[in-house]
Length: 155
Image 1: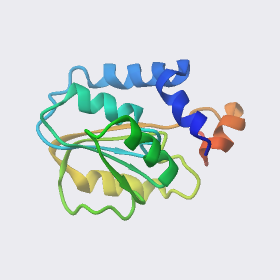
Image 2 (image 1 turned 90 degrees about the vertical axis):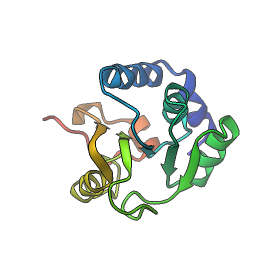
Image 3 (image 1 turned 120 degrees about the vertical axis):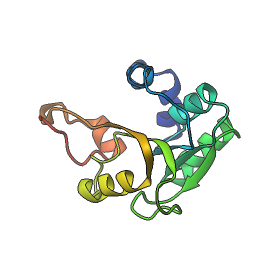
Image 4 (image 1 turned 30 degrees about the vertical axis):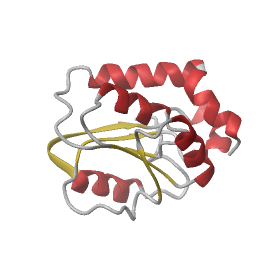
């Protein structure tokens, strides 16, 4: 993926709006009481926002792509950036107070059921999973191709 796409995460209107929606959903959630993990962190914009909002807990950002993580690392040393597959994480058992997976479980090659099981198993008691998936197949376009969207949901 192009570095310009990672840069667009920070300032692009859709990306900014979607992060604002995610933050609004979390506004009334009693966090943090433990570490935070963003799966599929891309260029790191949301993980960095989470780290700023919750300075007393460790925030992790995980992505498959080394280019994404290099870009994220250049923007923040506060987040622990990890390269890997969400089905093969270096964590065992309940670990996180919050796991965010924004446009991740709908990606090409991702077994959504297995991904949801991993997320469930890694949440601390009382932990929160924040998930977002792509909607409406008729919206599928070049952006989906660039970002590896495997499916869009209608329900």
